[in-house]
Image 1: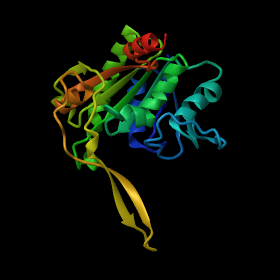
Image 2: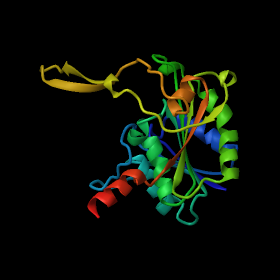
Image 3: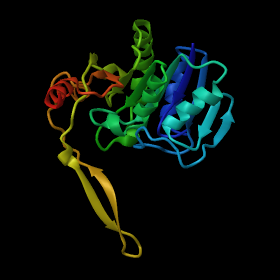
Image 4: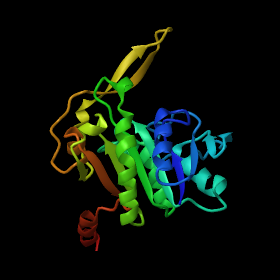
Length: 253
């Protein structure tokens, strides 16, 4: 099995090293194509107005001056053009990708691009406790991800689907199980803009997220992770709202 791995935290991110070790338990044919710099929050963007620069930093390790989507395209159409990968793994992201994160996340976008190109793709993210980013328990993902990925592959990832896996911010032995979940939704009132001033007293802004946690609906990715369970969420490429489509078809017929 050939595996292509990427991320959005950049080629030097520790989570990418973790993902390499995870992938090594599945195959000995692993290629890394990751962004030159941190691309967190770039979503599914493409570099249409800038050239893509490809740099080999070690055998089968490539850095791309571009987005995670660019990296997947570069990996498939250039680096692994002789024989396409059988699996794409994206991550391990430093922080959860839950609920509406899937629209912003470059990690999820890397897996989504793989699904668009017809390759089974899985996004993996490791959470951490609020305010404890520097004490992330990477061993949680590293311990549990190989078995989860192998089981998903044995079952088969349907075409035009991708799998979003999130690990709670705890030690491997503290995991309370695995839940197959639906995409949740946060209370977006926790999002705000913080205005600051630079040295010349000109304003600039940071997007901020509040620390409060609502009680999410049972069965969602938020509920699973908040409860100490690994969340596995199947996502689909087709975003069509079938029920609304049917009503609008009747309205405009």
